[in-house]
Each structure stands twice: as structure tokens, then as C-alpha cells.
Length: 351
Image (cartoon, rainbow, N blue to C red; front, side, top):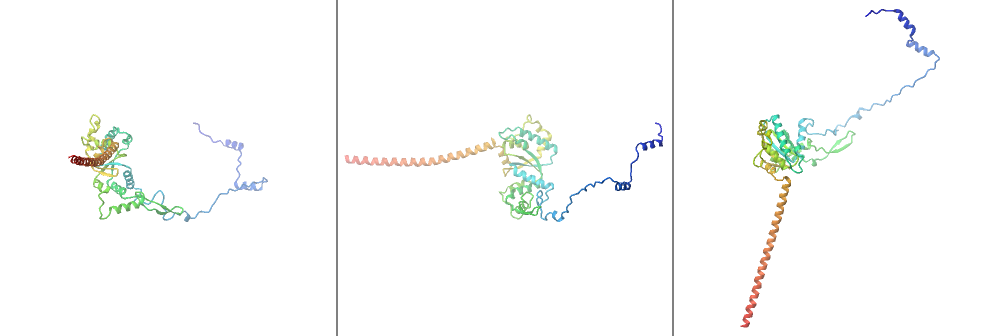
């Protein structure tokens, strides 16, 4: 690359072609003031300004309660509180629930058990129960939190909570009812029902199910009371032939894998909660053994009522018939006596 040479002539030629028109600021101002060119005054921009509001007007009332964060008896943003709310919602919305005790099942064993359970439920063909199998869940629960949720569901009535007076952001007083499961009203209701020397009544659901809540637990929830699906679940999780035999090896070969069998041996059925009532193992098996499901149970109830009505009708008809037969027999005896007396009187006159 050739070296660059400084050439002052080129700079002089450039200045001659484009003369510099720079004027100092002060000189330009003097030139404009002394020139005869009329000046045009541009309007100045006006900006909207307002007095800053007082900080006291932006301050919320001291007793203000945000609508998205109602007062609670325990912190509402921790995991235990949200778990408690999920358990109470599950107890209120699930009509059929089986309770199992488990012993250190691994994730692989849980996966094998759920796989076989889904296969057994999918093979059930009951009318009107097509969407039950996809909503059945087998999940591990926290025993202590589930125990508290049972207390809230049974001993707390949200409809009996009195409204509280709160202050809105505008400063206006308003009446609001805080009756959620984490409220102070729920906490006080549970404390009043379970604390003290007075034992719980034996008819209480919590008193009947609390002895079962021992150790690590798992629950099987069904969205509807379907004896057919319950029988299929029992045949996998708690088989007891001949009523609930395990699936055959030809039909379900995965059921007899070592992983699935190891997990099933660590599960133990301890009871159930069906339609708000507590059932032991025999009661759960009785519900699962109902032939024809709920329709069959209704048919049995109708037949029993009809047979009772027929029996009562036959008893009433039998009493009336016996009374009629007695009266008829008495009437015939009296007629014979009267006819016999007349005949004897006639024979005496002839003699």
C-alpha cells in the first residue's frame, strides 16, 4: 500500500470550494439584533402542572383488608395451608374414598400400581359410568393435615358465621362474611369441638375414622359411588377371592411383575368413607359386591317394599276373612238351631 502524503494544496482547494460560514454565537446574536429582517416570536410551550396531592389522602385505612387476601388464622401463602384447603375440598366433593396404609413404596412401585389400577378400571363396562375411570386418583396424603381437614369438614358450618365490619379503600364501612376454611371462625369451631374433657360422640364421623389415621396413608378417590368400579379397584389393591379375585396372568401380565407385587404387599386397606359414612373393610366389600350397582340396590329396595306391602295386605285380608268365616259359621249354627226347634215343635203337635 503506497504511503499517504500530506498535501496542503488540497486543503486550500477544499476551503475555496466550500467556504466556512461558521459565525460565533455572540456575533450571530449581534447580527440578528442589528439587521433589518423582522423577527418572529415563537409561542412558548405550556405544560400542565398541578399541585401534588397530599400524602394523607393516599393512605389506606388502618383496618383495611385487601379483597384478595382475607384474614386467616394461619398464613395463607404457605404450602400447608394450601394443602389443607385441597383436602377439605376433596372431602366435600368426593362421595367414595378408600383409606390405605403404605410402607415406604418407591416411585417405580407407585407407577406400577397406578398402571394396573387404570387398566382394571378401564375394563369396567357399566351403563352411565364411562367417565369415572379417568377421574379415579390414588394419592399419598399428609396424615396430620388430613386429620385437621376432617375436623373442619365435620365440626365447622360456614353458613353460621356472622358477618364482619370492614373498611373499604374509600373509607366506607361494609359487611363481609369470612367463612373460608382458613378463617378464624373455622379454627375456633374446631378448637371448641375437640378441646376439653368431653369426648366426641360415637356417632361422629371423625370419632369413627380417627383411629384409622395412623402412620403414612394413601387414599383412593372415586367421583361417584359405583360398585362396579369399586370392585375392580379392590381386585387390584386388596384382592380377596372369591368375591374380588385378582386379575388373571393372561389378562394382566404386568400385575404379576416383581415391582407391582412388591408395591401391593406394602398396601393395606384399613377402611373407607362412603357418602359421609365410615365403613370398615367388610362394609367396603359389601358395597363393592352389590350386584347391578346402584340400580340393582334400588331394585332390591323396591322389591322389599313391595313384598312388605303385599305381606301387610295379606295379613289384613286374612284377619277380615277369618272374621267373615267365623260370623258365617255362627250364622249357620243359629239357623240350624232355629230350624231344629221348629221341626221338634211340629212333631209334638202332630202326636
